[in-house]
Length: 220
Image (cartoon, rainbow, N blue to C red; front, side, top):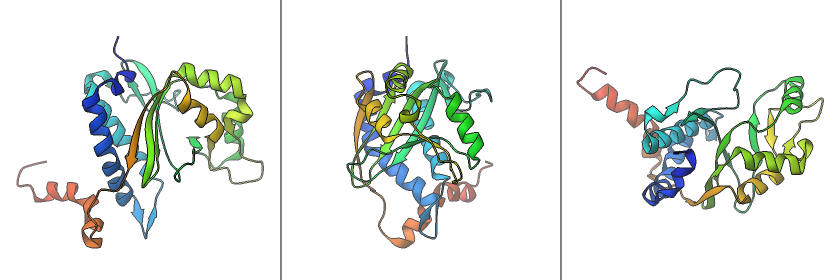
């Protein structure tokens, strides 16, 4: 039976990911940047890039973005199975914590922690610019095993009461064990920003795809 884990069995797809994902993520950062700072919307753009990859590999008919509101941690269904898409940026050699839910309300963060348990497979991308990172497919079973071994308080990074929580994260310790788990499939990626260097060209690059629509003589 086909599954998301077939993604990394295709060497042609793997090579395409190695070459193109860094460029696409770099363009996403440019598009999400204002005054030299990358905005939070970069996460949405990265997710769109990865969903497009899944459509390219598996076909639109095998994906569903119509996710019930009760499955808040799920981003897409692939062959009928729920998948959570996570991305994180880290310095070379550092394993990052991974945001699992965003909220600025401490009580909501605490409620989430108390009710949390892995409920889907995970596609995790770790970005380390000018260094090595990777794309990882982590099955739900592997997440549950690490969660049970570490316990809730070590698996999750829980915000302290009275602080601005900005969400709940899967801890660095948990992420390190997830990406090394024997059931996890991974692809090492060299993260280089292979995009035009000119300041003017760089600033215009994110808009070129939209410019083509305005320039077209055909109805869009």
